[in-house]
Image 1 (tube, rainbow, N blue to C red):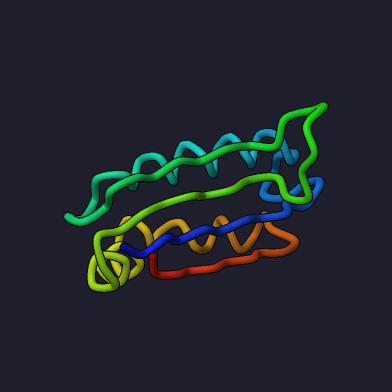
Image 2: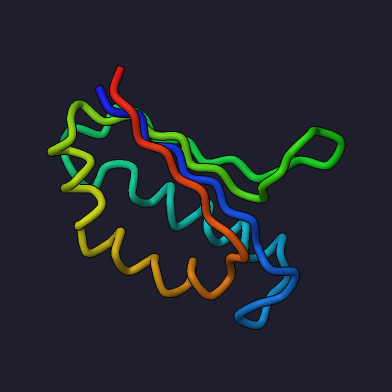
Length: 100
């Protein structure tokens, strides 16, 4: 199994919207990718909550059966279509994939 975790720190204002609106849009778009390829076991998206510690604004936690499933997800056109918006609204991105 491969775990794929990505965290984004967002700009205060980008693409005509503030951080909170852009975070909500990112979450909606990522959740829409939950079943786009076979082998996605789990896909969660969270937005930082006031009062709880966070060094990022949006986090994606996902699990894949194997590297082939992760590769299929990452190259899928629906996932690729997210990249321009995500790049425009983020200040920073951190990612880690690992096998368990």
